[in-house]
Image (cartoon, rainbow, N blue to C red; front, side, top):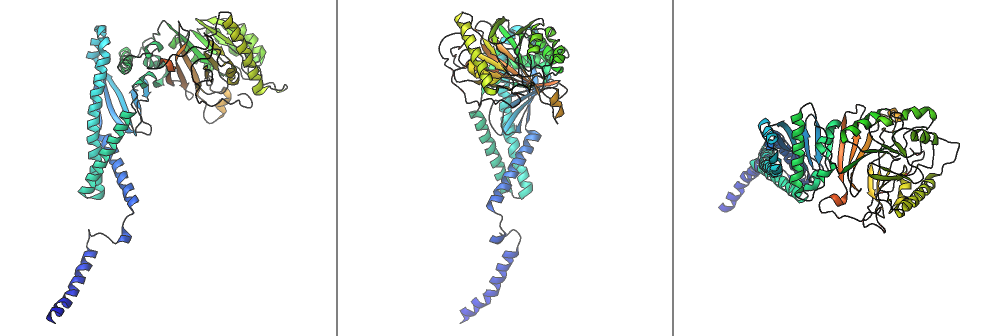
Length: 532
């Protein structure tokens, strides 16, 4: 009986203790008040990402010398990764070096006067510059990796401590940030592409592009590609800074033939100044115009063509669907112009061109248009003429048409065909191995494009050919945006066989049989209703 009294008297005390535990701060709340696990995980990830980003932003920066220039290296969040080399005030180079959720940004801060002077005074040291630059970049990236790791851990831990006020949760945030950085670094390492320096994209001042991107001969290299091209980029930047306001002249390789491809100018007078500037900067050997120079093809527009003889290079032209027969007659009378039609061929600057005009003249609504069938018939006729040239011992190197539909009919009989019409820059291999390049509008769609909210870009390309083989080696796609026309984006592209490890296919225009180049999965170009 006494034992029962003791237990009964202890009940109120135990109830009071239980109530105090439930009402005390820091005690785990009732299950109904707990945060959802997904919400808690999302909150932790948000804290980790925000803290890591703040850490990189504040202390994740490394200043490192690379050859004769001083640089600042940093990592920034990114969707597709890559590397950006910013060269103020000239512009920036973008390289598809890796795929990861961060981008490597390298800012060229200044030129080291002593190291640059030593390089200029002792040019023989340039031969060893590639190894020195590769070592400098490696040291800078290693330092950046260590510093970035510390930055993300400190940033995520500090923010976790502020948000959660619990050391254990803060340390978990820091560890997760380090794990995410490590996984991102492993992804970047696995996807690292050193050959990306062969195909840079330059954006900035148009006059700086040739000097920074470089000439075609130096980009085709199978030996120590990364070190050599990195050294070339740094050397070119050094030359630009050393020249200050006077940019160095572009020095093309003497064995390279440079072709400027323009198309669909559509009566835009600003195009002639741009073409003349590119001819001078890139030392162009021949200009190829794949048609639609006019808008309506009337005789009143013919005087628009008068600047062509003063552009500084021979001019190869084919008729577009906005160019009339009167336009063609007027163009053929200008000095330095070679008009191609119905499979006619001409030798210019070491290359043999053949082409045909567009069979349609769409501004004339009084006559029915032939559509796709007419373009294909013109292509069939051109292919037959190209075969005749080859049988006569004078194979054609480049075919020129306006409509890509006609270009498809010369597949397998010529290595390269140039076209326009669709106002988009595209390049692909057709089924039998002929490479088809369609040019964008060098006139930005013409003056009619100004009626829209935003003017269309002005697009053109520089094509590099080997003088001995007369084959395309590389090309630069040039894109001018806005009305100022002072900035540009230049993208370097290599023919597959010129990339390190690439095969050399049999040229379709210089031998018999089908080439060994496989077809790619590029979609068929579409013909617009009014023919653009």
